[in-house]
Image (cartoon, rainbow over all chains, first blue to last red; front, side):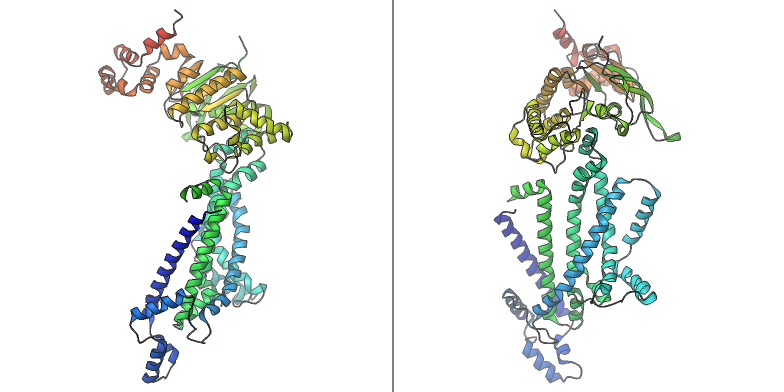
Length: 312
Length: 297
């Protein structure tokens, strides 16, 4: 689909973003505190702490540490977790399926709700039902995901005791985290699908289709939805990228053992190698989800395909 | 006299309701015979597009009637297939009038599928005939609209309209998004189709060059009112209303018209324009010379 020069360009951008992210992260982490204190634990003597500094190389100058870290990262060596000694990247990869699972479920439910609802709103320009749905959407758009999550826990876990408030073990534990994510993401997608549907319905090619006597269903499926969905693909891609990096709060609230939860735990423990490995996996995930989004857009829209061809 | 194909009687279109109701077109009326071209001219916002949109069913008349082949046209949703297919429209922006996701073949074949008279093989033949009618290469059929030039897209839009075998084609500023060379080519094509298919046209334009070339009759609209109408030779070469004269002057040679001291003085002063100023305008636009060209001698 894409030419090799375009792919090389993408990889070059990816390498640049990755190096930039790891560099910023390295210096930020060094601002947060002394990891030797964490490793040594409470009650360690100054001599013990110093010994740990020497062992892990924290006693060397910051630039030397940076150079060594980047060199190791280039070789794919993320080091070992400072808390339990297991390989840092392995720890992150073990947590990744939980995040991917949450993202996949939230994405599916989001599409199932947003596409039909957005298309319905786009077609229906008046009426009490429409006004009510739009009112709910406006309110929901104003709530951050974690507020919705806390409200849901209060209602369904603490109040009604229908569902567990934390954990990752079976369908009952999936419900609240997935709804929290979807209730935050869906209003945006619904609005975009609504606006695109409305715009497509007003397009001249829909008017000409009407003048042939095509039925409203034919017009919706052949002309309106394919064009309305195309505009939504970019947002769906952005929402996917967000879920692969931005579920930190939701995963923490529900103790969902994904990479967001791991990121918070390892940051609190000043477990630098794991934090670096999490950020690395997040950057790769975002890059991959962007590449998939572009490929889907190109597949759906010949104009993007021909632009990509012209650019290469 | 032939029975009119289209008869517009005292047509008015209004937007808003109650106190906010405002007529954007009022008292419009004319007849159009089969195979004839009626140009609708006027400046932007004068109501010319509203008139043809009412005929196409895209605007609802507040008063008056539109008769097509002797039958009053109801709103778009209630029109019979014969009525729908009989009136087809070509829009200003050829890019927007073709579904960007469909190949040219699909754009042309889909209306034929909706009509449902032809089987697969006959439809494919008909699509190729339509491409021939608008002088387009069959190799373009598998391309998407984005791969075509503006002129080619407008030809496809015309071919799509012709697929319904209309008796009336509405061209709403159909040339204005094209460059000069393509305007001439597409207007030549429309004229050829008019002759070949005995197609009547409502030709909305503010370009007097194409109006002179295309139209048999002209209807001039100012501020929602028809100010002048008649055969093209009469309206363009013996304009009665000052508005028509100004429109002609501005359209044919705006720089020269405004540079003429008689006209610019008259415009600055406001109020009615003197005969002397109008005579100047007629000189500038070469109307007198054109009239001589057209005279039988």
